[in-house]
Image (cartoon, rainbow, N blue to C red):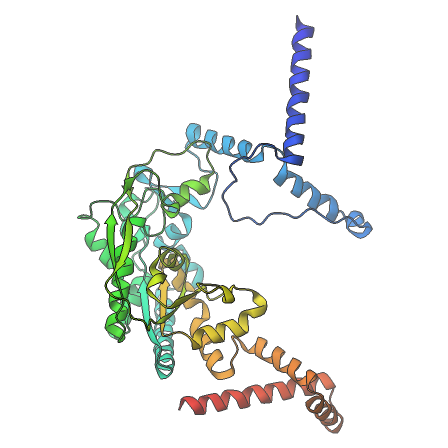
Length: 444
């Protein structure tokens, strides 16, 4: 009997390993992919140098650990056991608060002041930096105005600021908020803006449904129609454009959540879904007559702006271009599909074709104010390029491809007794400064 049991166990073990191998090689079973942001490891290229250094073996081991058969199922099972049995979330970026509310750790760090102390030595230094950034914003608005572009800043709310009472018991709110200080300064300097933070706070107790879902960290789908419509009305006030209104035609109360309304649950990668209260996932349409001459929209923002524009908000405009963190660019126009190679040309052209610049940022993003967007705009208008390093590299290429220019630089290098590379760079710097001064004269 014991021998038979051992044989059965051996066969089952071999069968299990065989299934894992088959699944790893050919994927006959289509499993739900894991959610996350970790880049996948590529299969290593074998060569003697990599093999001798051990790099090939290390990469192969990493690749194998990320691609073994039924990996998705095994990880979800482990995460489910940890959460159900020990109330532990294996994703360090997701934290459970009271009433099973889920928070993104970055927002808790901001609410407790951890981000502030990581960026500044004290509150007064943070305030001084904010005042400098507001002055830079005023210069940005003036520059855009000279090119007939309207600027609007949107203070996006955050779950920790609107519902601090649901935060974990061990998390205590810090008594200074950098985002709220910026709101005060924007009011003092009369900078066009919308303060959704304090508006969300003012209506949270009377709203029919929570303004944030239990498992989300961005604005809930239920708030998108009136958030978008409020922005459209504000843009109308600032410009001469007649923009459409957003009208909800179906509230659609459901437990089938919009993708961003349960984003934190998805990041937990559990085997079974968490229980969900029914929430609105509204359907809305545009009303009123849309002007034939609609404005072009350029958005600089974080993931809140990404969620907003893909909700349909961008349909109110002739086109929209979205600069996420002033780095990655998305566009409603296929010819502007973003690549790093096209960055310089696309960014300058997008700015030239914009009528409205909309900035959208939530609380943790004020420690890297607009991610250098004001400086980017100044560089584009002064040099035609996003940054000086890229501009110099392009001008150097121009010099080398122009035989007359390049031969003249060769003669200069000999007369000045410096290297050719130094002389080419000097010429590039001179040309860049000349172009900058010409553009400044045009603005004046």
